[in-house]
Image 1: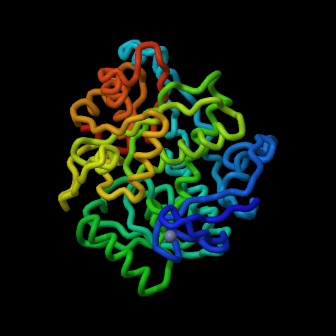
Image 2: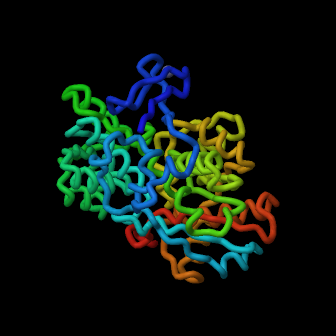
Image 3: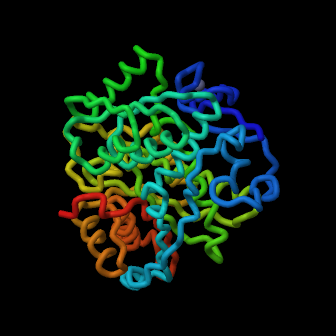
Length: 378
Ligand SMILES: [Zn+2]
C-alpha cells in the first residue's frame, strides 16, 4: 500500500520512509493521505481479524511489522435503563476497556509502535504516567523497543506508574509537575538523539482510533444518530471521524453520525476553539477526577472543532458533579464501572438532550474508554 504524510498547515507532502511528527517545511502537524481505491475490497482484508483486517488504511508499510495483542473488536453493550432515563431509543456503550491493557490507548499504540518498528526506531522517550504510557510500555515491550518513561515522583506509588516499571521501561523520575517532566524529556531527547514520541501530536496514534468506527457496521444494523466522545487531545474523536469518512466514501455506511465532544468546565480549550474564543490554562494541576480529559493544550484544536461542526455535532463543557453523578449511575444501574472521563459522555448526552440537540427517540453511542477500578473511587 502506499501513503504519504501531508502537512495540515501548508500542504507540503513527505514520504513514509521515516517516523515523522512535524512538517519539514513549516513544523506544522501531519495527516495521512492514502493512494487506494475507494472500495471495500481494496480496504478491508476479509480473511484477517483485529487490526490486521484494516491494514490497507493504516500507515504501516510492511504487515510483518504489525505489533498486535489482538486489540480492538470491542463489544457493544446496550444501556437500556440509561436510554429510558434520557428518553432515547437506545444508548450503546463501546467497551474500549476490553483492550489488552484495559483502555482505548491500545488501538493508538498498536499503530504507533508498529510504525516505530516499520521505520527502524529501536529506542524512544516519552513523558508519561497514565493509561497512555501504560499502553505504550506494553507495546514497546512486545516490540522489543527500549522505552524511556519520564514520570513525576509525585505519582511514584500509582498503579499505572508501577505497571510501566513492570513492563521493563527505563524510568526517569523527575521532581516536579507535568511541565517539568515534559521539559526533562525534551532535553534528554535533544542530548541523546533518542526519538521523543509525543503520542498526542503524531498522526499514527490517531490513525489507530479509526478502527472504533470501522468495527461498527458489523455490530449495528444502522449507524447511531449521535456519538458522544470524551476529548483530551481529541484523538478518539479525530480517529472516529476519519473512520466514518472512509466508510462513507467506499459505501460501508450512508451517513456520518453527529460527533459531539465533551470536556470538563475546568479545562475547556476545545470548547473555546469550537466557539471561536480564547482560553488560557493556568499552571495548576486540574482538580477534576475525569483526568483523561484535562489536557490543557491539545495539539489539533481546529481539527476537532471542524470534525464536530461538519457532522452537526457540538463541543461542550460539563460540570464535575454531573460527571460524577453519571459515573455512579452507570455503575449502579448498568453494572459498568468506568473511569470518570468515560462517564462524562453520559453527562454530555444529558446536556445535549436538554438543549434539544439530541432528540427523543434517537440513538447514541458512547465509547467507554477505560476501566474504573484502576482509579481511586472516592
Ligand atoms: Zn507545513
